[in-house]
Length: 149
Image (cartoon, rainbow, N blue to C red):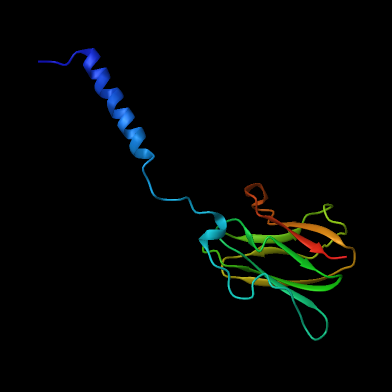
């Protein structure tokens, strides 16, 4: 005995509905980029050494974000370290050309997984200085350094 086209269609519709209902029955929450890793202690904290140089460390990894992606410094000398905690991705760090209140030419052109590099520069004008990983800007790997006034 063969099934009629009508009953075959009914079974197909029932299966598709059941699959659709089951697809929505998950307890998993998608991970956000910031939830994929925990930064090391001291990351994102601006400190000042005995010579008055402000120091900050940023981290980046396989999640296309800088941690932190915003920070504030006072006018003066800044020593910025970027650590790549990624296991697969290579990054860079640069201030977005022409986007800040003053140009900062210092950059980290290549940062392989596990590497850490430091740049030092002077800021004098209060305002925002956008920065990015130019390899992953389209994926949202950007941030802002604010110079306080």
